[in-house]
Image (cartoon, rainbow, N blue to C red; front, top):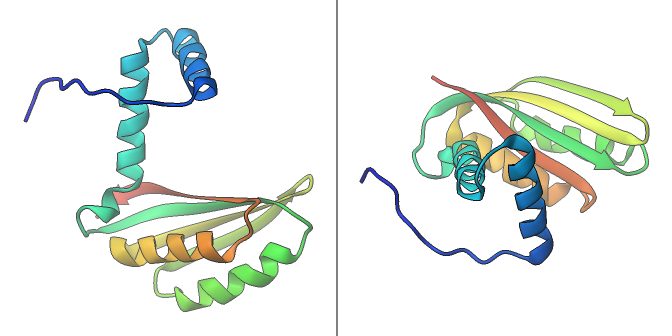
Length: 134
């Protein structure tokens, strides 16, 4: 179905205020900003809808004592070495940042992403960024 569809969405007041401020700074309408944000989110999660082979980056950023993440991550990555092509770990101030380059079946990448979210501590952010669909 092409064309525009209208539907209502309820969000918290603070989020709405931030949305309005960012839309104004970017010179976009609220609807256009929400459309772009939703489009990016759906692209990041396309592996949930249609299986495919792809290449992407899983990024983890943790605000925790050094060493905690580096102990957990190798255990998880070893189970997924069939799709992990590169892993880089670095520190920026007190933050641990890991970049994991992955290539393989989208369902396998989704499993790794989910596993990392479950294994890492609550003060860690994990995000998958798709780069190419092969």
